[in-house]
Image 1 (cartoon, rainbow, N blue to C red):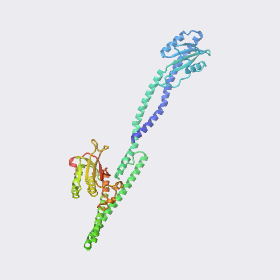
Image 2: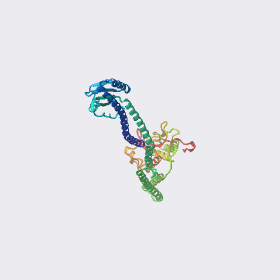
Image 3: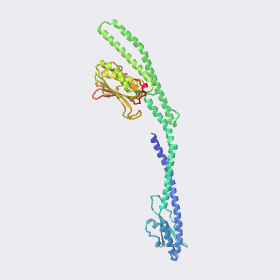
Length: 474
């Protein structure tokens, strides 16, 4: 945006300087032409006096010699005609029938003053044409014609134009450096702050605020409105979190008491059907307790202000796979890994651990007993933490039935469970909590269909150099 605004300002300033320079350019060219014209007019008047004597006496030797010397000196053509437009003498052949020359001679023979030529530009190679009447005692005896090249005039005008262009470019550069760039920086600084703050709020950092004292009045009002909006969002989330936390906590005690009472009913139930129903009731209270625990975890996670820290992804993944190996062995489910050494990423504390526990648990429960593979993908060679391909990917892939496209769009929502998994133990909060923790740390959670079948759950985290070995946590 800064470049686009600078281009616009540059165009406006260049247009302003051009608009101011054009009259100056024309005035300079006109002054140069006028100076040259005055000199030629004086020469024409001198030749007219000399020609008057020559035409009266018929002796043209002196006039011809002067015309030839003048022509050699100024590379000009001089011709003298009588009152009938007949050529008396010429320093060089001149075509008197050319439109510009013919009209100039007619003006002179009509006793009219010589017409001043228009502006001569460097690319205009037309010569000066000047005709002066030759008079004696009010009688028109003829006319003197001077046709001179404009090389010197055009060169002088070109020099003036070059200096003016250089001065204009210098003024343009000075205005851009001294005025335009600081003004653009002043205007866009609040916009950049708002852009940064908007992204932070969108990622869940609702305590982000912007300064209301920088920039133009409109931007200050926008910053104030943004802060009010952020305050409202933060207050709303805090109220929601507090309600969920308090409700979950307050329901724990009655639920625990209810479960104890239900379990105590076992000695009063004697038939098999009653015992089965009693066991189902105990299981439901246990599931209710898991839901409350999940809600409480989400409320605590939303209230967390932990900062991202570098973690050894390779070590964390290997550690969690080892922890789950016994459960997979008990279920006769193969669990394999592809983990390169020394892969680091930025993450919230324990976020990757929690994410792997959730994904490995889901793969074990919903993967239909198919092999599960855990892979870690490092950034391409040379990809830094700020590069375009700087994400570390941790993928848990199974070969089960997976999810449909409609289910993939819904998966990860709070309390969502596939209709095919309603009888499998779970709360529907695991993926939702995992996604919230991963995104709060600047990462992403993607669910996609695996090839040829199954589900691939991928956690993407920003890559980061590994901290010193002493600071690493397995």
